[in-house]
Length: 423
Image 1 (spheres, rainbow, N blue to C red):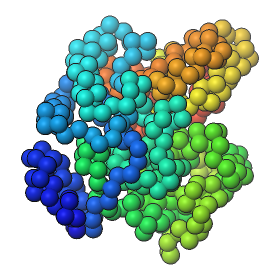
Image 2: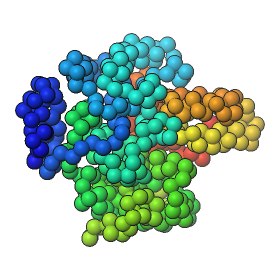
Image 3: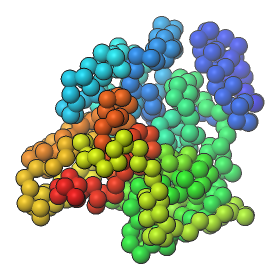
Image 4: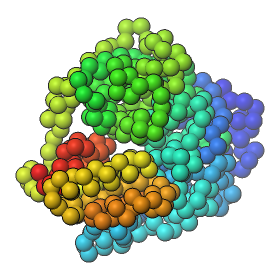
């Protein structure tokens, strides 16, 4: 890998031993993936994936403290993934004991470290840092040092930024150094599509199901998706961005997609069109029957497959402000149609703290609370990592949560029926 004189000097210790280790880490990372050089990180803010004070992560806390003690802190302020615990989310005494005394007992001290390293503000805990209310939305062409998979695929695809699917800790290393290795999705060639996805559905595909089908088929490759114009049009409005947020998260978790292109919609597809597709690209046709097959073949890993759901999560990744409003309307309508006053299954909607504050300024907040739905900033995945929660019969409309936990996936319409009608 070619290093500039400045980068070589840092590697040789010009800015101290700790900074040299940071640069060495990035060089080794780049060498592993065949990077030819380092390129500057150009986004205003960074985003870190490691947000939880999990007791077993002592090496991470020790590393962070070494950086702090050496004065080697992030050159950017950053947002970070959601907090793992919220006292408002349903949990019994034993579950709370495990959360607070065993699993996430280092949360408070770790958050202190994050603040010293450059956390944007106390509300910057969300996997959807690009939402307007949060304030960490990179621009087209910005080079990032992110690791959160759902945020990386959104930034690459919807915003046209450039970021590889980095691992945790590599995100802050790139931010501290101000450089990241140049390979993969940072290159023009690496952003070309090796799959063409032809969507041939008679009704608008469920975002989470479509993303799941594509992710499981193409894995880490880049897909170029056609046939969506009748459903999404050609403009990235709030509704489409919310759809692509959930769609992309499913491609990234059910597969390992870091970038997708949607014909006539996403920035690079609108600019470059079919020239993004490589010669000999594979083709995958998706119709309604294929999506039904995908959902039908999801494994049910509950101990009792016929158990009644005990909890429902909606919002992984975090919900947008408009999604919260739309879901409030839908829950009210579902309850009215069924003759019920409150949801029949304990239900948690999750969103970014800054979005939650904005939502609470609207009349929708009181309306949603009246339905019995809990609004939280929690990470549902971190909640489900508690073994006493993982053994529960939890349902969700998130294909990411389904993939990483024991939660069982249902479409949004199915979830609505279950929580408002009990069917």
